[in-house]
Structures are given as C-alpha cells and as structure tokens.
Amino acid sequence: MSEFLPDLDAIARELSGVCAASTGDEARDAYARATWSTLIEPGDGVAGALVAALGAEAALEVAFSDRTPPVAAELTARQVADGRARWRPRRGEVAEALERARRSGVGLLTPNDPDWPGRCADLGPHAPLCLWTRGDTRLLRGSAPALALVGARASTSYGEFVAAEFAAESAGAGVTVVSGAAYGIDGAAHRAALSAGGATVAIMAGGVGRAYPAGHRDLIDRIARDGLVVAEVPCGTTPTKHRFLARNRLIAAFSDATVVVEAGWRSGAQNTVHHALTIGRPVGVVPGAITSAASMGCHRLLRESEVTCVTSFADIRDLIGEAGVAGEVGSDGATPVDEGYTGERTRILDALSARSPRAVADVARRAGFGFDEAAALLGMLELDGAARRRGDGWIQATGAQPSTLW
Image (cartoon, rainbow, N blue to C red):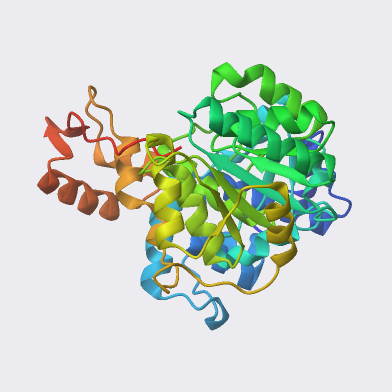
C-alpha cells in the first residue's frame, strides 16, 4: 500500500458513486489517476510518461518523494524536478474533486474500464490519465465511427446550415458526432445529431459539473441525457484559454476524422486540425465564400495544409474510411513539440488578473508551474509588455490576453 494514498476502505468511500472499480488494485489505480488529474494541467507529458512507465500509483510516489524514476520513463532529472515543483502545490485536492463529482452525478472513467477510448492512445504521453463523465460512456468505446465537427463560434447561417446537415447525415448513418459544445458550429452540430436521434459527445475544457458556456446549459444537459459530456479535468475546474486549446487534442483523438466548417484566420478549429494531423487523422475542410471572414481560416488550411476539401457527406464517408492510415505529421513535416500542449505564455496570462496583483507562488499554482518556472516566464512576459509588477505581485498588462481561440 502506498504511503501517498489512503487505505482501501477510505478509497472505496471516496470513489463510491463516482467510479465502479471492481478490485482493490483497480480502486487504488482509479484514485491515483483522479489524484493526478487534480495535480496537472491537461497534456502534461512528464506526468504521462511517468504513469506509462510506472503506473499511476507508483508515479505518485516519484512525484511526492525524492525517488529517482527508472530509465524506462525516459525523463531527465530536470524534467522530473520541474514536474515536482508544479505538481506538489496542488496536493490534497482529490477528496474535494471526488465529492464535487458525487454531488453532480459525474463519473470517473479510467483505462481499466471497458468504455475507455482506445483512440486516445495515439496521443502518447499527452493522453488523458482519466476522464470525468456525464452520460453514456459506451460512446467512447470506438465500436462506431466518430466524426469531429468543429468551427467558428461567430458562425454564419451558411456555416450552421452545413454543420447541421453534415451532423444529421452522420448521425443518421451511425456515426458519433464529436464537438466542443461552444456557440456557433459546435452547437449546431450537437443539436442536429440529437435531432436526428444519433449519438453525440461534447468534450469540455472545464469541469463537466457546470455548463460552459452558460447559454448552452440546456443543450449540454440534453447531451448528458442522450449522449455524453466528458472532460479530463475534475469538477470545479475553470475553463481557461490553455485548457480550451489542450481540449482540442481530445476532440481530434476521439474521432476517426475531423471536419472544419468555418474558421477565422486565427481559430481554435485550426488548432484542432494541427492535433489531428499530428496523430495521423484525416482532416476535411468546408470551403466558403471568398468574401467571408468566417471562412478565411478554412481557405488558409486548404491552401497550406494536407487536408481534403469537403462538400458533401460522401466526402465525409471517404475521410472516415481513411481513418487508421498513417498521415503526415503536419503541413511543414515537423513533429509535435511540448509547447503545442503546454502553451506556457497562455497559461501564465490565464493565471494573472488585470486588476488584483498576484504573488509568484499563487501564479505558479494557478498555472501549474513550479515557482522558478513561473518567475522566469513572468520576467519574459514583462519584457514583452504583457505582464507588469505591482507592489509584491504581478498583473496582466492591458490587452495582453491572447486572442480567443475557441
């Protein structure tokens, strides 16, 4: 029994009503994974490598002791030290996370569960360690094909019509429609899939116990009743810009293909495309009017990336048929780097207030960094004019928040 986990009776009490682990080993693993989800920011590759090499429970011992991880983890001493610095300030939050989940009717899904989505293994060390769910987790099994339909929040009537048509036809053909429950294209896709009597999955950037955006509360509740709402962060977690961008990798990974319907020049949908291409998933893009700002990102993708022009459901069928065939890693041939998952600048800016100064230690805890990492990043942001010192703390400079990408 690990000294970093409570005894099995306490674990069973805390998991009661949240996770149906069937054995003592599975319960300890589930509790350890729930603990990890409170310690890390989504896509933490160091934590993922540790858990893959040691298991979730033994990885916690490395995180909270001075134990040296085995060579199998393929991590440097510096990576482990930096990881410990950003994980340890969040220790002790798991009991509250499990209680929130129980009150909200939220379940915990782990790789020991038969409903665990095998598709996400393609994310490697950046795969989620567990998932928090509301609804029918069988939709994650991969027994049916899945299509990610994503696009602009500031969509046009044309874009919403196309998204709804493609979602309804997909749902009617037995394809699970995956999206992010945002305004615009996401909402149109979810609604059409539900109206067609099909399956849909909403992947959230914050905890699934509270609807975001609030204006989609009824839609998200309906998805939870008739489909599935899922997140890798525990209940009570605030959706931030970094978490939206990290969430996009799950939208891509949980699907056999991704189709973009409208996207501005800078768009979260393009971020989803990057993740899809990185893991070899086919991508389709719907063209729009050359005068439409809502389609500028689509036309950019069609011009610069390894994507397919999609104008009908037949094109979508072809894309899904290509799933599983190794694709290019990106339009520039580059392999993914950690920055694509961590978004260091965005995470620090998310943790700063524009009005109330915050100490470095507070910024580090909120952003999921060690103290020294946060201090160094704040210094660089100060040089860029994005952050300013005020007294003993730091504030976000006016206009420094990165452009909205979801």
